[in-house]
Every structure is written in C-alpha cells, then in structure tokens.
Length: 247
Image (cartoon, rainbow, N blue to C red; front, side):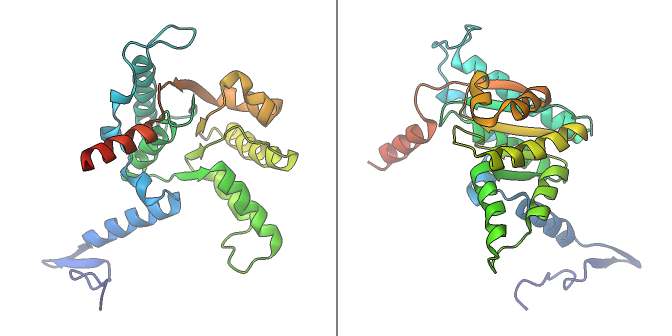
C-alpha cells in the first residue's frame, strides 16, 4: 500500500531482537503533524537561521536614535531571536519579541526562523497572519460548511499554544471587534506567562493608533522590541538577483 512504512507497516513498532522499539516513522509523522498544526506555509519552512542573510543590511547607513547601522540592528534582532529559542526550549521564556520595520525588512523571515527552530526541537508553535486569522474567525459566523474550527476553538488555540507568533500585526483599520479579539488573546497569554512573537510594519510609538491603548500596553509589557532597517524591500532585491542570474 502506498504510503505505508516499509519498516513497521504503520504499526509504529519494530522488533530488535526480542524487544519492540518505536519505528523511526513515528518521529517523522509527529514532526510532520507539528509543522502542519503550526500553519507554516511550505515556503516558510525554508526560513531558518542558517539562511538568514545579512548582506541585505547596510553596514554604513544608520537609522534611528541609537545611531547604529542597519547591519548592527539586524545582528541584534537575529541574536535576540536565537536567544529566545534557547530560553524557550528550556521552558523559561516568559517574555516575547516584537519585530518592527518597513515592509520587506525581514521581520517575517526572522519570526519563521524562530518557529522552525522550535518545531524542529519537538515543541508546539502556532504561526498566524493576523488578517487571515481574523477572517477565519469571521467565517465561523456565516455557518459555512467548510469551516474547520469554531471561534471558540480558534481563540482557545491562540491563547493556549506554548508559543504564538502573530505575523503582520500591521497598519490596518482595526474595528473594535478585531481589537477586542487581539486584546483577548494577548491578555490571556500575559496573565498565563505564555510568550508571543509579533511582527509589525508599524513603529512602536504608533501602535496605539491602530490597536488601542489596552492592547498596545500589553504588547509593550510582554515583548522586547527590535527594529529592522533596509534600504530596499528584500523581496524585490531577491527577485532582481534571480532574474539577473537567468540572463
């Protein structure tokens, strides 16, 4: 039968002498399940720390009050991300991270680095693009047959998963309903000391305009901020590099 493990016949156990031991396929299937549950798109599975490329960050151009280069800012954010993974895997992470910066600055890539490292270590992560997640919740109100989860289940997972990554908490016009959902998730995680990693294209000082005072206050309390600066959208630069190689 196609897809059946040749070693154990999908029983999950193999004999070594007179002893039954778990088959290697059990670990592979568990890993595949974790990645599926994390909701990482296939492309995002490739975003790992070893593939984070500092060449896109200027070593001479400086931005921000601290007067450090784009490269130095990226190094700090990268180092914070790796340190977070180490602390999280020890079960000691109570404080999360928030990556800010313009579109195409590498924020989502760095958040995915964290997600993939945690998943590879056998821990649970939920990675959600905030606009899509809010749409999923709205869809539960319409009684659509293809809706996989209820609002209660979606919110419950976001509140309770060991690590939540909220991607693209950006410059959108959030209704009071949307603000309340985000607040509910963050407030629960703050009270239960569950970390969250956030990416946003909104400067930290402007977040309150979009999310409101309550939600912004909790984000600041929960997360250490890091800003990424680039001269050009990295996605555009990479496309140009690919097309140049084809010529």
